[in-house]
Amino acid sequence: MVDNFRDQLFALKAAGYQTITLDDFQAFVKGEKIYPTNHSATFDDGRKDSYYPVDPLLKALNYNAVMFVINRYINANNDNFYLSKDELQSMLDSKRWDLSAHQRRPDMATISADGAKGHYYTNKLWDPNTGLEDDQNINKEYLTI
Image 1 (cartoon, rainbow, N blue to C red):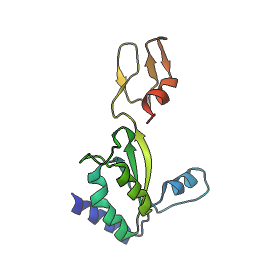
Image 2: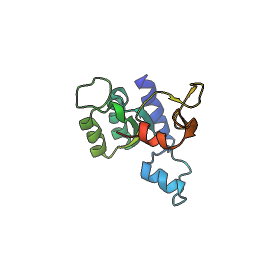
Image 3: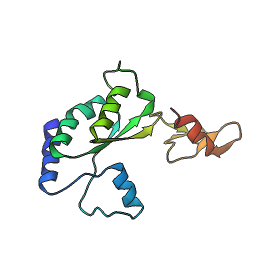
Image 4: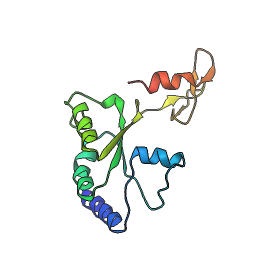
C-alpha cells in the first residue's frame, strides 16, 4: 500500500503537481491566490501509520501535507497508534506538515427527539432539556480539548 502511494506521489510530481499549505488554501478561499494545477495532501486522525511512512516521501519530493488530528487522542508518548504531542510538534518543526483539528469525538451525536444519531458537524444537536435543536452544544461538547 505504501509503495502504491509512493508511486502516485512521484507520478504527481512528474506531472508538475505541487502541494499547498493551509495558509495557501486560506488565501485561495479568500481569492488572494490562484492555484490552477496544485493539489494538497491531507491525512485524518493523527495516526502514526499516516505520518511515519509518508514523511520521508514528502521530504524527498519537497511536498507538504495536512494532518487533521482528533484532539481527544493526543497523548503523552504512550500510544502505538496515535501521534503524541512531541511527534506532532516534530511534524510542525519539519515545515512539511500543517496540523488542524479533525474533531474531539469520532462518534455520532443525538440530533432529534427520537434519538437519531448524525454527524455533529452537519447537524444541529438535540437538547433534551429544551426539546429543541441547539447550535450552542456543538462547540461546548464536541470541540473542546
